[in-house]
Amino acid sequence: MAHIVGIIQVKGGTGKSTLVTNLVGIMAARKQVALIDCDMPQATSASWASIRQHQNITIATAANHLELIAEIERLNDNHNFIVIDAPPRIAEITKVTLMLSQLCLVPLGASAAEIWATSDLLKIIEAAKLHKPTIDTRIVWNRFRATTNAAKELSEAAHKELKLKELKSKLGYRVAYSEALARGMTVAEWPDKKAKDEIKAFSKEIENILRVKF
Image (tube, rainbow, N blue to C red; front, side, top):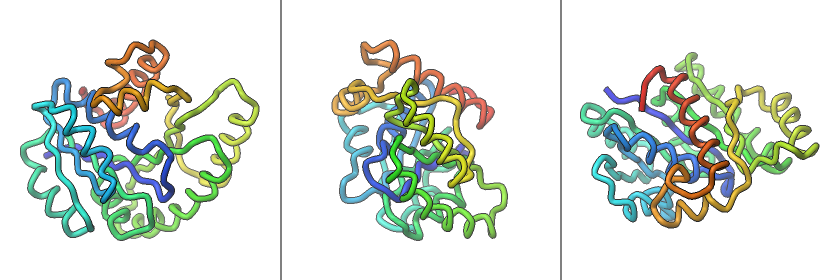
């Protein structure tokens, strides 16, 4: 049985593909990972995996919640991890991702607009919890500038408005993430020490939550 991690967000441009590709790439160093890209027709994560051509990564796509369920049933027994890249909109597939995932990550940039948009996701989370009260959903700060007062204020606002747990690790505002993604790489393979340290802390925190080793 695979550990399933969903990456969900109802707003585009929040760094969802950054989380998906780096997480899949790090997991696949030693484990069998299935990437299910539901963000169609963009399919950024699937395109990244195609460029990467790693033997431990299985690429799948799903255009709706029924296809997603079918892919998980197909991949569950012969993979260590399944990572779901959900589409940036309110849809049944988002609710199914919440229901089927052991952990759901919500990327969030340090802007008021993203916090407002993410508040729409709370209704879906609450609806899913009626069927699965143990849903574990956590914010991951992306493009975060820790030294600015605005970032600190937005973090406090998000905590107050969204009432979701946050990962301690944060991904900074760095060119390394987009450069690595475009080449089918992770920032762990890119010459940017700060980005490497961030993604190492991020992956370690996910390991601790799932109680597994990548």
